Image (tube, rainbow, N blue to C red; front, side):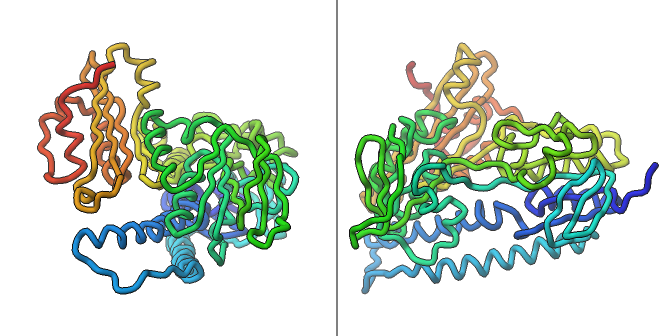
Length: 458
């Protein structure tokens, strides 16, 4: 067997890369990881973590509004400092970057800060030096993209959002997916006037349609929606009241201080030397891999967003760990383990929150002829005093033939926290009878899932 500098070389210190390298090192593999930008990847730096921090900030105005119904009198109107929020966010992200480094160091993984380019099946150029590795893992994640339209360079992408140092008075968010709806809610909650432009006729494609429509109706209360509309171009404004103008395909012109595109992400594969080696990429630039995460070139693997399979942080973690165990574990059972892509829970931290696990109603009806649908729509107890027009929608899908619960969906406060527990139940194969036999915690929204008794009529 030829000698290699490393058993395992990982490109990219995001969720998948860090988990894979830590696991490999713990299993005795000589492991190194290269990162040219920031530790923690998209999730820590320009994704899940900072986005959730901003959504917390956006909730405070609602809480101040609701406080009056509970006897609290706010002496002075609250003020908001966008710059201070960004500074505090940056401090937390810097702390997390350091934690990721410390985790790698304590795991025995060699850290190389710099760009890595694959120059051969077992060879890399890393920060100007040549190294060899028995196995190479690409875990470089993805990046937000801007459209190729006139004036597109004047807009921000969703990664740029977290570098904004001042709050725009008016903002246009372009996109209809989870990132667009989340950032629209953040801007609106913090006091910006928001336009949401989407080329499709509905938001949140891929989620249960009824739940997505419920969220869309809520968005109408705090954002101007322009559905079925495309952006033609962006211009600098000649009017002092705004900085930019976005031109739509129906002839309308929307003035704005900022324009942000959240119209998709693309895999970070450019400049890694993959094309020259013959590594197969799909139409989006993502690495094509088999069930064992190996690319078309033996010894070169990929996990996480860069394979564009399921672009969620917990999935990347599972993929990275599974790969490392398969390559280096002495335990035959661990080497045979696979990542299951069934029953992956997910959440959208928009306003209101949307969370889901299992099949959508559309998917379930196509699979189970005898589907039973249970629903509950209600005003949360909190708002019986505030009078706010905020509601929660819950849905449970049950296969009538087996009584097995095949999908659970929720839109409303704390949806993500509640659906995590539902995911455990579905993973365990829970039936509707199991839910019916479970006592609820009263008074909570979550108890609705164990008190639904009558299916809705078709």
